[in-house]
Image 1 (cartoon, rainbow, N blue to C red):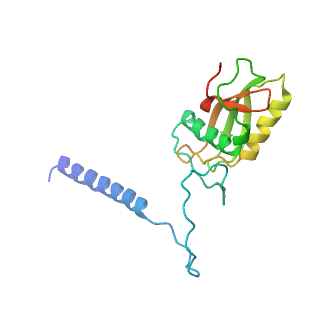
Image 2: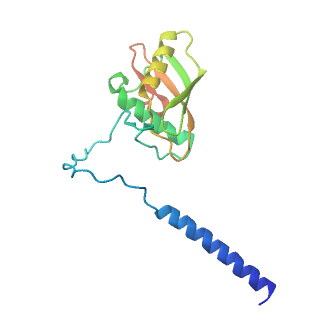
Image 3: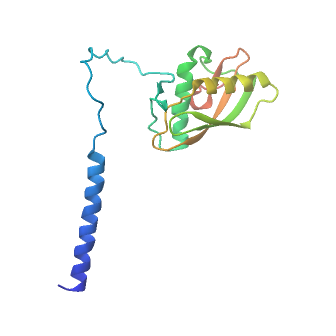
Length: 175
């Protein structure tokens, strides 16, 4: 057997072993808890999506399929809209808004808010700054950014004088 053939053989053997290990790791089922008493019939699954935080043992029980911070913005905005449906301004926003703020929100791997950083704070309306920060902290845990590990996403808050708002990600536009 030549040196090239031996090298090819060992390379193929190593590659096969690595692929086999990867496949077996993907197929291994998580350990199951010991069976207790038979459970009652599971409640029917609702037709509407779940909105708002769902607390899991270590954060959010929901996850986001986003693979970029920009894509996560939609998960974050939908989460906030679900929790504050009564505060969303319906329709197109008027031309003059009470406040506009641009905020970075850092979410850890389980959906907990770890940091807020204003890029453009509406300093003329400190009550709006405080209200937005309170709403975001109260909305934690957000959908877990499982594909990203953690995420810092940016959104623009469009605030009407009535106290209702829209997020730029889900805005209906402005007149």
